[in-house]
Length: 593
Image 1 (cartoon, rainbow, N blue to C red):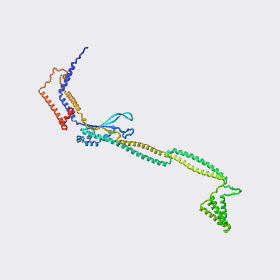
Image 2 (cartoon, rainbow, N blue to C red):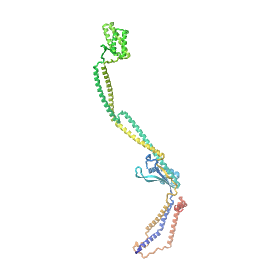
Image 3 (cartoon, rainbow, N blue to C red):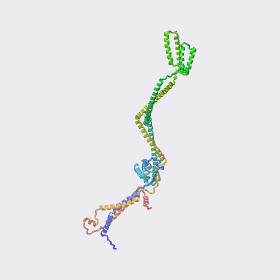
Image 4 (tube, rainbow, N blue to C red):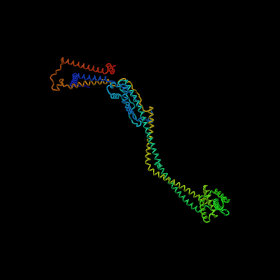
């Protein structure tokens, strides 16, 4: 096996050497602007790294804990998400009055407050406060879908000193925690108060509707739509009862007609015949006979005659026995007839005739009897019938009359009921629209009231949940600590970036000056311009003046560099940054102490 070495072309090696030599020549020609640019950028970077004031960050971590009681049992009145509440609390805490109070309490931004208005101070204070939320992916219990949930957030403040940063961070943390508790409790109380007010308004509305419905019911007098079926049923029942009553009345009227016909052919006083064939008078007939004898005897006998007194006693005994007394009408008729007879007798016979005198006695006796009857107020009882068949049919007729009278009265009541139910059904059509509107409004108000009351109970429980601190809350798990090193600026990074920018800026300035220079340097540039090679190249030989100028230029550059460094250090010292402190700070930053 043979190894073949491939030689590098000589022309390529020569070109690489020429390029490096050209770069070196360019660096030598442009070394002054390169060094000045690099030095300027480096000084600016170093000054920035060491003059930039340090900011110390104190940070607190606050955990968002779920409520202790499961939400399925007690539902909280706070329905917003945690990140929304954090942003809301941030806006409530970071108000102008609160921030300015903290600025004055801890004497923050003293230099800015001397030269700038309060708005810029508060704007800078707001920029120095950082609130960052921590989100994680969780599974929603209700929808079983992955979602982002806020489980914690951090609250940080960048201060001028570690102590100030920690104190302000503590103050802000306390404000956040306290405002969260007050916001949740206030929200729960406002929810409960709002629902209570709505419940009271609905209760008043329901009471008003019930009063209107009661007035309408009273005005309707049973003609309500909800009683339509009952009224129709009662109307049908009353109509059936009316038909039954009419049928019964017709039946009783027929029976009454029949009994009256039967009663008409019977005699009430059929004589009672004794064993010897003689007629036996009852008490009533004997009373009538005695009255007739008394009327005849009084005409020719005196009132004290024994026969007259005996007849009077018998008449009074029979009246007590039978309960029959002479009626005033009957006595009055007899008295009138006797007076007419007296007038006739006087005209015919004169005043001294015995018949006239007896007529006067009869009239006096009748007047005395009429006065007695009128004084006692008794009336003669009806004559009792004696025929048993007559008595039976008469009692049946009396029963039929009583039943007929009762049925007719009952029919009038049933007819009134039919008319009443019919009137109710007619009025139902008029009352139904207004009643249904009131009933619908009341049912809707009752439904809303029950719903509001249910929510009010939940709101009251939620309020107690927030008052007892059992709901979702912010827990401080990492309080603000005293920062050991500044959060910014990152001085090593600034120095490294300054060095990189200084080197790049120097190289860029050298390339820029080289491009702007139109001088011809070397035979190669002459060949490219003229197109012909030169016969010989004579190098530049500096004389003493050139060397002297070069030395003076280098001295001026060194002096300028030292002056710039000195000027920067003096300005830093004048602005309040002692050089020894800066030196030790730089050494500590670079890790050399």
